[in-house]
Image 1 (cartoon, helix red, strand yellow):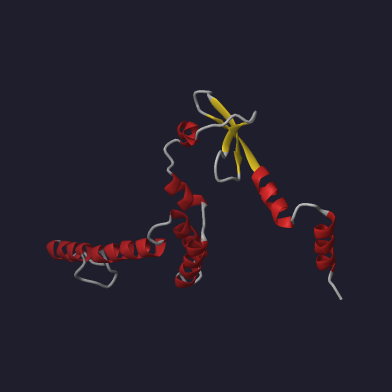
Image 2: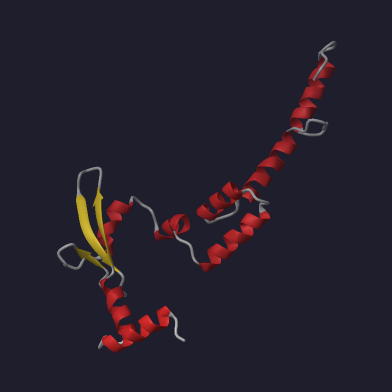
Length: 162
């Protein structure tokens, strides 16, 4: 007995003269996103980006555009920065999952780390904590602030509670 999806697929193959794969490719070639960008100066760009290997950027009327026409509208955001902030590939997804597990449930930190695409926020917070401990420890005597407090106590007889 065939399932509903199998029957529908069989009918699709029988009723359409183009092979299904050809129909999918044709659909992908027509897939487009329209955009409208405006600079603070008032200059605008209306365009369409197609899902293709070549000739992907066009005006709404179908005239070809070079990718470089987008540069003034990107305000210095490089492709690398954009991909780090908004893109995710398989490797980044796997690494992000590992980072979430390593950060013992601190999802906010893990997501922030994944978005910046560089060293993890966990590494940064560890370094900051290490620097803070080098300056002051509540029960320590060697860190800089502890040492200065002790010197002040010794210089000012009668001062207690530090």
